[in-house]
Length: 376
Ligand SMILES: C[S@@+](CC[C@H](N)C(=O)[O-])C[C@H]1O[C@@H](n2cnc3c(N)ncnc32)[C@H](O)[C@@H]1O
Image (cartoon, rainbow, N blue to C red; front, top):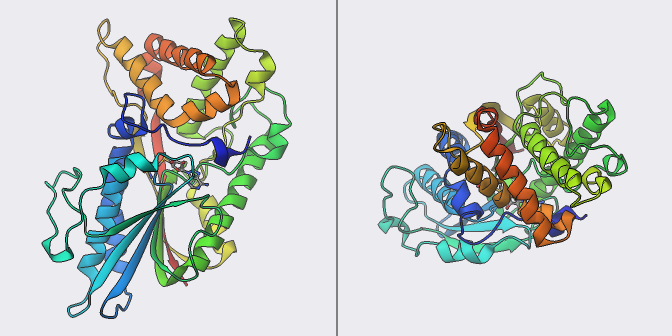
């Protein structure tokens, strides 16, 4: 399975879309990262702009939804504050994702443009702004390859995307065991293969951005990761929690005769949560960027409901978990199961377990690794 052909967050605006679900889960992370992003720009963006300069920003793995627009707005405003008197810039934001992304919904959500000086204030609560002071363009393709001309980007940004790998490591694809992911009871070689795949992919990302970014330009990334020093196999954090929920749903489909066991065993999630140390060592080895800062930020709740009143809200909680998982994984699960009916069965098992065992789910949390790199 070519991940880039099947991976896409669920488009549109229904209950199980990324736009709707990210407003209650991922938005908390984007908000927490916002001041770090602003400070990083204020302290590090020292580009000399000539009159009429064009400032180019690219958001890699933009998906669709208000998060994406909030990030673009945050970056443009922060850069505007760094521009010296007498200098002027026009901004272009490139929204980058895989071809299967719902770019149409994103472009339809764009507020109208306004001139930089007449820029409309937002309401101070990180809500979507009423206007934008940048030109916008959508760019399709994998961010593990070159997507822009040489030395044209000033700021590269990527939020919650780089934990997705370009593929499940080949050695894992050939292993037949009922694990959808690195887990504490799988062979050590499986963890090592995932780390190696992350290393290969992240190196490709850096190499492509190194070509595209101007000297002194910034790459700001936040991705699902894990605290340093812990063992790959035991501590995949959120990714491990989600994998357990997946394993349960697959097992139920096998027990109930919907799928054969090898269908379950051949499913593996193409993602990896690195520690800051792993990230740092890849940046150093690749060599084109100086690592200005890296830190772990957490712990964000994985689910939109953080409290459930017993006897009243269990079902609503189960539905919210299933909708959130659909927004992230429906396309990838359907590509594996091969039809909509089985996919619905799969997510109804996710819903049932989250309803029955809601207490187990409430403690699921996400840790982010946040890093700022400066092009040497
Ligand atoms: C969870 S969404 C994050 C969306 C948004 N940045 C946010 O913070 O809410 C991850 C996005 O990364 C995209 N993605 C994953 N791998 C990619 C790749 N190799 N190239 C480009 N986009 C990729 C997915 O298609 C998806 O839209």
